Each structure stands twice: as C-alpha cells, then as structure tokens.
Image (cartoon, rainbow, N blue to C red; front, side):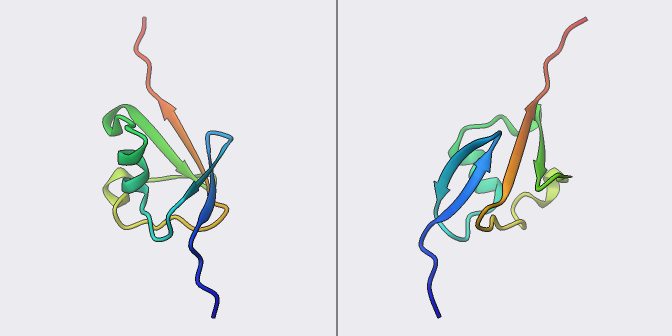
Amino acid sequence: MKKINKVKIKINGKNFVIKPKMTLKDIITKYKIPENKVAIELNKEIINKQNLRKIRIKNFDKIEIVHFIGGG
C-alpha cells in the first residue's frame, strides 16, 4: 500500500500542498484565517464551523473561504 506524504488542494482557486491528515481547523489556523469572520465551503458544500476539527482534508479537495465585509 502506497503512503501519501503530500496532499494537493485548492483554496480559493490557488493550489496548495499540505501534510496528510490535516483538518479544516488546521488549515484555518495555518493560514491565519479569522474563523468568526468567514464562511467555509468544502467541495461546494457549506461547512458547519462546529465540525472543523472533525473534517479531514483529502487529496484534490476544493476549499472556498468567503470573508464577511460590513457596510451599509
């Protein structure tokens, strides 16, 4: 069985290579994304932020992170 030592993903359309077994919470922390000011989509599905630690990132996952901007 072949061991995967790198995982290729896309975040907001840009390619990244990360370590295997990282969670969405790890990604948020690594790239210093303010968790309370964003919406997160994984493979076109909105993610509940309570599940960030449970969701492991897999090869070729696509993550979209949308920042909230106030205005009026």
